[in-house]
Length: 403
Image (cartoon, rainbow, N blue to C red; front, side):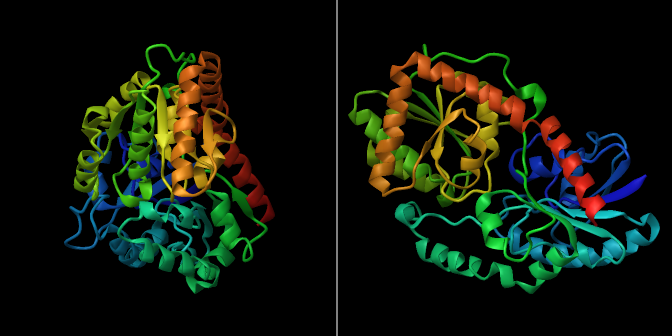
């Protein structure tokens, strides 16, 4: 069997975001490949007892950092040191295992492709990679305290294709996968062949609903799920609630998640005087989230800087229509239906358009049922992990044939 080393810095079950992606990619390879997962020692406590049959795990962390979780303030900086340091460990285990492929899968930013491409005699796969997306300047007030930092970040992205580590990694790759169009456009000049557009995440087949819903009893129940930080745009969702309240629609929004801006959001809710319209759930267990999707009428995705959006797929799988900005990963996911895409415009216009979309759904059972049906169809036919697995298998076959 051909051996694959899957570098998944974040990888464990019963979670969302990056760990969810890392966990599911270990089962993406065809049966004639044996997968070895390279991950952090921190993840061991989540993995032990849940190991996938036939998969072997290697754990690595630098001394003193084994207890730092996925949301630690400095985790991305630590990740850079981890990527370099783990290379020496990989050299050692490769002497014994003789890997056929090394695949860098999580924390896949266009600026950092890791160093596994340096292993001699091993084919390298990178992606799906994101990070090419930047927030639109017309919505800069969402970054109420750090817009200048985003301007610098956007400027740096212009030179991402000249990063020598990225250039060498791409040159050594047999396959590069882009998670969204923005990243593809940012890197396309340095790699046009052996590259594919492929979303990094998916939805478990068993989580897809068997029937669409109607608007009855649900018309004013909004749902927002995510990490509470500036780029997720929760302040935009709150302003939409204010707009709906002025229209006498009596919206109720349930907010699920936690993060560095949690206290600011609480203060903002008080300032806007919408305490009666907001339910703050905080972080909830992975197994509780599906029940919240089923009890809601509309899912609001307000992120202005995201590679994709696992929560969009979860919403589609529940038959819950999504309202999102028309850009980045959300644009790609919702291109197959199941939601309303709001064009990027000035902030006040975007707030109004969100409110208009919700009001249209609340006033038309036919439109709502159609979007719910589209959501389930899209999840089932384009976004399940089984669909992803088949597409990736074909993609891998082409890459190996052309190598």
